[in-house]
Length: 272
Image 1: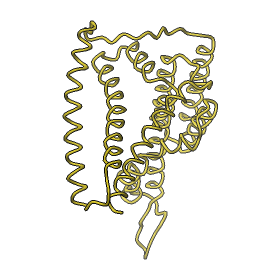
Image 2 (image 1 turned 135 degrees about the vertical axis):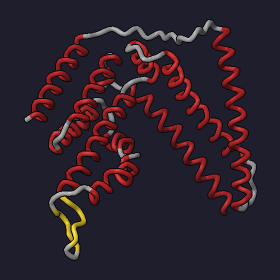
Image 3 (image 1 turned 180 degrees about the horizontal axis):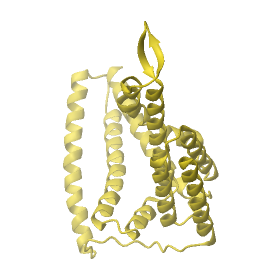
Image 4 (image 1 turned 90 degrees about the vertical axis):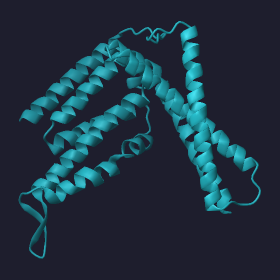
């Protein structure tokens, strides 16, 4: 039935998102390479690698960096399929908007010609490849950081690195609200499904969805006010304090040495 398919599809989608969040939290607690590092060290070193990616001007160097990312993912007990699905989630959008047009608008030596007219140039193919690999490598490091670091520890590390407290608080609350919003929305779909007999027209489904969105927004605004008042009653003064006590270990210093050596080699190779 049409109405049943509409509800079942949305319930399945929201449930899948909830399971994805939970599985990410489990990855943060795995006994992997990056999970055992100090969050501050991970943030600084992975940002360093992202800077190296931005400076790279060779397709081979960018390919080597991507192999390095996959190796770190494997050593951190992150499934490669799970990891690549999240990395390439937005890559097709980027390729369609930026990388693919670069194939055709960049002047240079002809690579593909049709009826004597140059369609793709060598410089265009190289430019598109550089753009694609740079975005892929940079996004891979960011995804790897998020998958191997608990969200609270990541925010605490950013605050230790002097990121404005307001921005850190907004990031923390946004993460919690996204999870809560998914849970509430999933409950609304399940409640309607359990009370539905027969099917609804497409127009009725759209009207119900509009009412559900309006109700969710009203609940979110009311809840945000209650949460803020609760925070004030518990002594909130613009700075969220956490119980994480960061402490550098031998593995952190070894990782820093590896990151510096790898970054130096990549920069030297890029210069050559």
